[in-house]
Image (cartoon, rainbow, N blue to C red; front, side, top):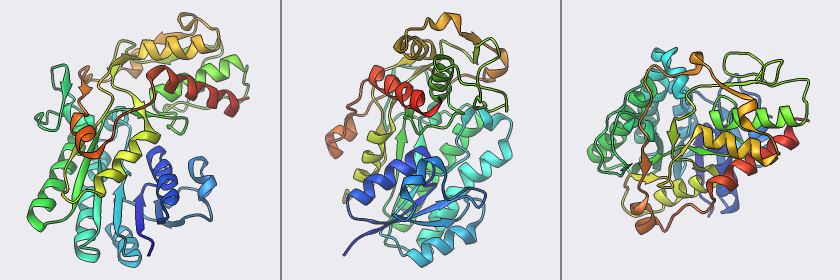
Length: 334
């Protein structure tokens, strides 16, 4: 008999890749989207007719409860959140409610309506935003330093609370930054690769950034934040495999999913622009309006526990990831 999985936030980068993976394994997939979201949104356009799509929001407990109650899933994956750390400064209340308390609505709905379901929560490396050091593992103390990271930390600790208090098979994947051609344009990697494509292809109808402005200026300049900001970047399609593997384990446990490498925003620019024969220095500027009030540390993720227990490790190099995204955007923006 086929398993049923609910993916909360299926139209996201991770949600859509996870749906692809679960369908390939024979699951029945129920995916939730916000009521304002089109059923034919780009990331899930190819999934229409393949999965059941329901409207539900993390801020509305009844909508979440209804989906879980009616679906009776074997597995629940919460991928949804107010997911842009930089935006959390401008929307701290919404971030706390959706990214933090919203997870409790999922856990409580699962506890009441599908107590045997296994629950995955998308935790973020941002829970360690203020940590100094080379790398973090599952034992690293939480030290979030922005509204998004703090909300994620609360949610992560509530997963542990429900696991220990109610015996639920609930776990958190502490995922470091992960990118793909399906990444939102609010994130710096896609902003860069989309800009490269628009400049190279001389696109007239430009996509817009998170401020509602064209992604590049009239003189083909791309405004970014701090160019020396470092991240541990991996490939999202590989990271959803780790999510699934976590829920197949007999004992629920939290895992770091990362590459244990670190690269700067400047390096992303060098690779992306260089891939099409352009010098990034002629097209990129650091703009104060895109700087965070506090910057997270240059922390790498130690994924050794996931490799040992899950047999998971990253396969795609940083350069291949960025060039794959550039190639996809060159086809998308013409």
